[in-house]
Image (cartoon, rainbow, N blue to C red; front, top):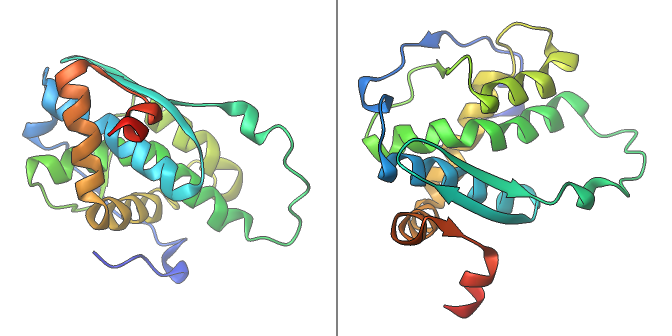
Length: 173
């Protein structure tokens, strides 16, 4: 998958139906979902602290303190940066698509999920409450996760085996 061009940033993609393979409990699918978040964090330069997964839920965490000393970033492309940041929250569902062998056909949404709500919060100030920005964010996630799929699988395997992952486990390997 090719990294999307910034000219696609404001393109409005259609909504895709939620694929059948993305419903119901599945430790393996949830592990890949959380691993997708971790890999996008790593790509974005955000330091992940841990991830957990069960057959019904999971979470990938980062230390928010790493952003407390951010200086004024006047001059950078705020909508583009927002869309790239939102990719971290879209990465979970995109990882599920890749894991289940389902092609990305448009914006895939779980409307009541924390991930979707956080992505909307990041994108709304720059794109309004529509879908602009979400398609670009999901395509960024798709490009990064496709390229770094072995890393996603490495983290997902740990989550499946132990239920948790921390960066320290990578150092021990």
